[in-house]
Length: 475
Image (tube, rainbow, N blue to C red; front, side, top):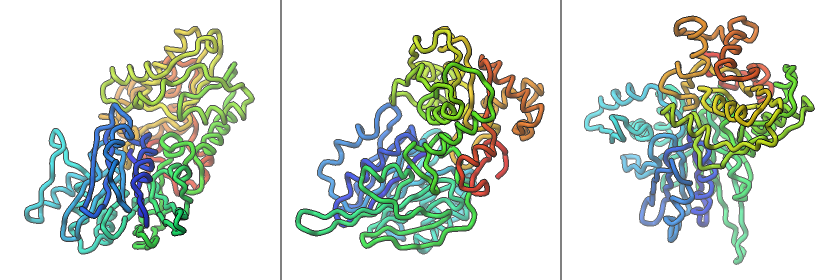
């Protein structure tokens, strides 16, 4: 997915941007970048963070940098922030989202003479660079950002660092959040340093001493300056924020639209338990994001919570991220370490945030049986994923046929279905057959999924405001 952070201060903001960006590391696996505006112009650096921590790559570069304005980005794909010099002036740009009509937008850009794009690799171009070209086609930054909102199919939230301040533009349907923080620090000489930040994850604010003052609405644009917040374009009426922010992607201490991630997961796990009749000796969560769902399930069911294995922390990437099936299986197996004394002879019930391809779950269950588990019941904290996400990069595999649900449907139907939406209805016999088939393929004692309505109730901000495309196929 990716994450964004930016800060503007009457003092120095380098440390805030460094740590604020680092707090988004769970959102991206590929590139990290920082850009600061200084007296000499932009100071920018970008590094590959696939096999190392963000902080380790950037710490040495911060020495000697003094800046009152900066932005940072964690990205799944393209290197950013980019620095641009155009008729609008000098700026740095970072984006989060997914542009489905990128090829068409590039072709449209070529209608303007002498436009070109820098290739990244294998003919790919940087989508953030495309956004900058759309912005530069207008007369002001405001008009450029509005043009991005109108032309992009998918989603796109943007931070623009200019010599005047930081433009923060939330995706027009609010699929990802942008939150404004503020802090005032009294210095030893009696002066007060005023700082504002903009962040994807609200969890960045507390440890950096910021207080949440404002959450941008869908499509809203603001300008952060040393003086404060200037509203550039009002919020739109319609919102479709991603449900996976609560179910999986979001950090437990973050809050979006007034609902904390950890609290949602407790409620979601409890709702999952109320519809279940499984008999088990203990409840556990697949670390990390399945843990809170499991705590909610345990609290509601009164089945004791335990940790029969632990994750060998953050050096392993998400198991569904690598494109190689063999590498996904290796990562899924290596990152979890069992505690055999808590497994042998036990009936275990595990909650996980989701089942995408099923890679991790198959490896996890096999690991448990090798430690002589008696039964392994799996509970997914979200409904069956039937469609690849069109708006962000969750469940973005090379083919929808890789999804555990699609493999099952092909086995049951003898062919691929263009629209498998009927398999998403828990009251449908086909749904029941699919769930049973997936459980059998992945070697579960039993399998149940959360249903859409209970998940939406746990989020609690109104079903009409939440995107459920991955499960329903409806926009």
